[in-house]
Length: 86
Ligand SMILES: [Cu+2]
Image (cartoon, rainbow, N blue to C red; front, side, top):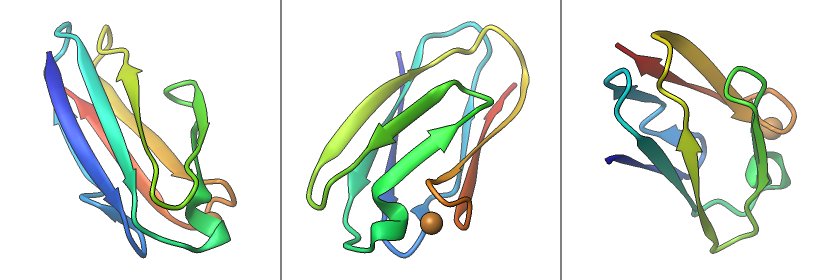
C-alpha cells in the first residue's frame, strides 16, 4: 500500500503526490485550516468529494490503474493539487 498524507493549511501541503501505477494507494487529508473554502476536497478526475470539518482527517483510496496527472481542488476550485501516477 502506497500511503500519502496531505495537510490542509492555507492550501495543500504537499500539493503534489506521486504514486506508482498498479499498486494500491491512499491519501489521508488532515484538516488544519478553519476556512470554509478548504472544508471540501473534490476531484472529478479521481471521482471523489469529501467534507473535512475542522480538526478531522479522512483517507480515500486512489485508483492507480492508469498513469497520468489527476487534479483535485477545494470545493470552490481556488486551491489545487494533483496526483501523478507513473
Ligand atoms: Cu475554496
